[in-house]
Image 1 (cartoon, helix red, strand yellow):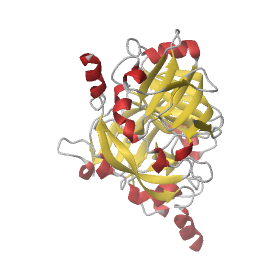
Image 2 (cartoon, each protein chain N blue to C red):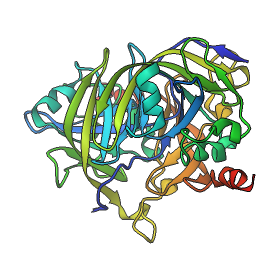
Image 3 (tube, rainbow over the protein chains, first blue to last red):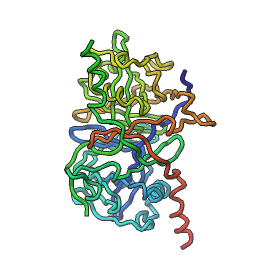
Image 4 (spheres, rainbow over the protein chains, first blue to last red):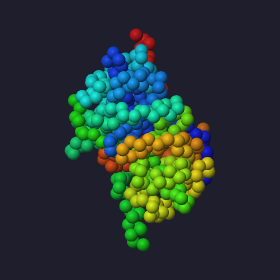
Length: 195
Length: 195
């Protein structure tokens, strides 16, 4: 028997994203977002939601390009800080001692210390209420060599991303591997065939 | 120095969602989706993406209501199976021995064995390419009592949700807690104030 526990923006855990944009003076801004994820395979698209009052949104209206930077768990304090203060009056990455570089293929900054960066071009915005959803096509994926396996693929355990639980307002690491997609479920197909 | 590893729908890890809908004969269908997440705080909204050829989308065009069911890691095989076969010719939950019940507040089925269920009303669709994004307002959150703490809040470690890495096509569990949102980052604010 399930219990109704109200409503709210609750789904857990969510990937923690750090959005990078340039303002009109070419100053780098970064903002943490947890409302976001992949939304299309072809073209590959990512979505994140932002309040329209945020500096990041003001920047996006001009540049229409951004990065999504994935911090490792060792940067949990930095990632949290990027969601607490505004880039209007704070140089957030410098305050934390992080290195900002221009992304090679989009007009947006990226954080060198974070192991994975998506280069994105805004293709659509969807107003929803308190937040506006920004949808971007993923133009390129940049990865630190030390998170790649022998086939050049990023390994989640090496990337060590941060997960967010919005109801409890806590951050988590990724845990153990438990199955393989499009494979683990085949045991039920076998049952059907045997009947 | 970062290495360009191409492009693609890559962000990791993502929450694994099982979408519940009724077809026009009131048969319950469930479909696994990993392209999705929270997209607005007020009203609380969730998004997931679906190919327009999917049975779930056909159902949604008629009912405009759905559930998002969050499986525990012990149901990884079932959740994977729900993404392998189509509900057009398979009663997926029954094949796996799972219990389907009508959700109390929306016209959609829910899986009793899964610890958390979001009841959703479709408010918008966003065509993007291979996938169409479905945006739903969260009408209610239903939780098993044994995943709630003493304040009635769901505990991620007890819910034990499944995470998905799309590049490696692997499933993971959630790991250890590493920080508190809007708190962990305050150390950098203190530095600023001391200067």
